[in-house]
Length: 228
Image (cartoon, rainbow, N blue to C red; front, side):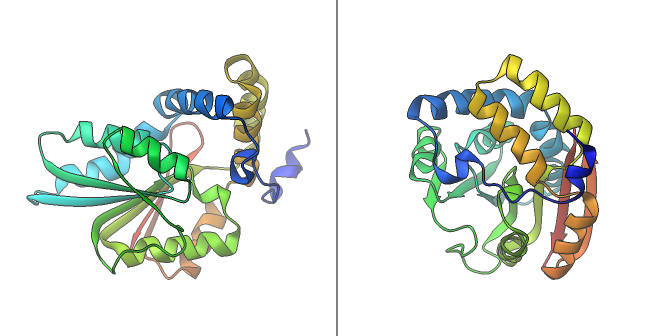
């Protein structure tokens, strides 16, 4: 593959987005995503961002919203991380299957449109999203960030991939040795659909974010944070 192909975001939709998968593929995908979250960056990025912020917050009660929560794996981990404190996590996702999976993990799941979240302004202390932004068009990504910052009383965090050639090449080639074709192909396309740092900054500016901060994390992850 020519590296110049990564100059612009891919507009091709992933199979996950169009529902082109079997129940068996989805079930295995959930297991493989737990592996990806564990070893390929999300937990590390969470510790560097949201988890660190919560540790500094000495409030008696903290409310958190996970947007595009998927199966709720990271939300469940977050609750376990702070099981000694009064923290509630709500997961928002458009998929009925995802909401059911969240509820099985003890997460309060809400089925809704991430671009029109059914929550009042400032109704959560923190709002976060992981590996969801790249599924959206530029226009919808801006709308998502506006919604997240509207609802976040203190700060929002977005953790997503960074579009880079080497990570794409490695996942495309080595992923086939570890993951099913569904996970490998969608994962490769996820990198092609993701934002680079400058693009992420631009959409945050267009969304009216204050105190924009973009940091890199382990294995081609970007962390965007900001306030309303």
